[in-house]
Image (tube, rainbow, N blue to C red; front, top):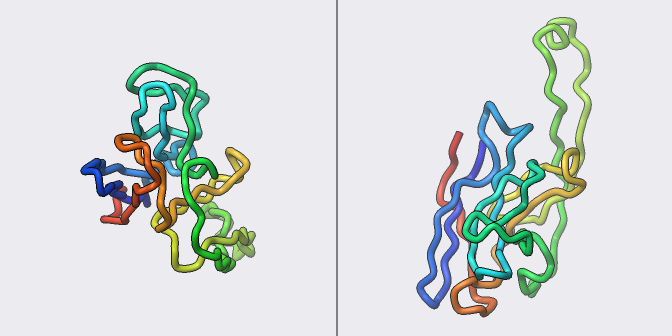
Length: 151
């Protein structure tokens, strides 16, 4: 299930986004916010696709918002393990086969959005409650807030 996230800044910039993926496409689709350094816009892109161009101007000069350049890390990160399981088929469940565990670490209590994506792009994605780079005022005053879920 994906997350509905709102980005807002003191300067008046606001954007609502549907991030992650739904029940039917969560293994092949991962919506995530990115910043275009050429046209100075925030847009949502599918990080599981090969197309990383800006939706506004078509530039390849983009940065996803999980990049270290896009936020100010001010809080110590407390990491906690999260156990997930590999999806089983009906027959595997019927035969009583043991599920394979996937153990990942996430930021404890500070995550607004996180997505297990290391199997596809080599890293897990997350947005925290830290200060991010605002595309409108060009300051590190943008905040992300969880506002709901989508599927």
